[in-house]
Structure formats: structure tokens, C-alpha cells
Image 1 (tube, helix red, strand yellow):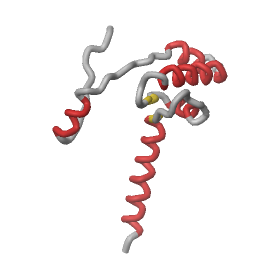
Image 2: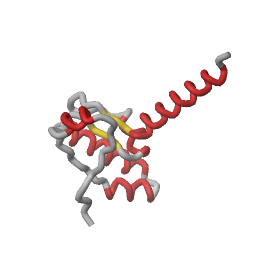
Image 3: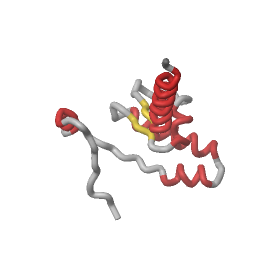
Image 4: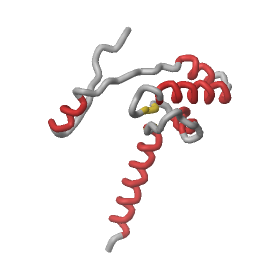
Length: 109
């Protein structure tokens, strides 16, 4: 079944206008996942690097959905500078900010 809709939860209407002009390209790496499951980390990493290089030729930002891809992104030279975002990094950064902020509040007199 092919997905037909995508939901974006936002807090202000001003977020929507810039997104109306956004084009989304999906790259689904089925064979990449199979490499990871079978334990062939080298093939996995090569396929991710090739996908990153290919996408960097035609997109402005790349977002990685799996943690296994995020570790590869830091070790790849792209044909042109393109920001590569990964949910594991941003998620961990957000968790660290929350933890340190909460710890500072608890420690404050």
C-alpha cells in the first residue's frame, strides 16, 4: 500500500507557508537494510555513502531516518556541501538539553 498523506504537527500557521514550496524526494534503501540485517556493515555503509552522494547532487538538505545511516554520514565526502540531518543526533541532543536543564533546576537553590 502506497502512503497518500503526510502529517505535520505544528504550533503556528507561519510554519506552513514555507513548507508549501518544499519538494520531498524519498530514497528507500531496501537493499541497504538487508545488508545491515545480514551483518554486512561494509556493504551497508557503501550503499549509504552512494545514496548520500547521489542525493547531494540534486537536493538542498538530506534527512536520515535510521541511526545506522547517521554514523556513516560523518565519514563521507559529498560532491557539494549539503546539510545532512539525522534523527538520532537531534534526538540525543534534545534529550541531553532536557536532562541538563532539569538537572540544573533541581540543583539550583
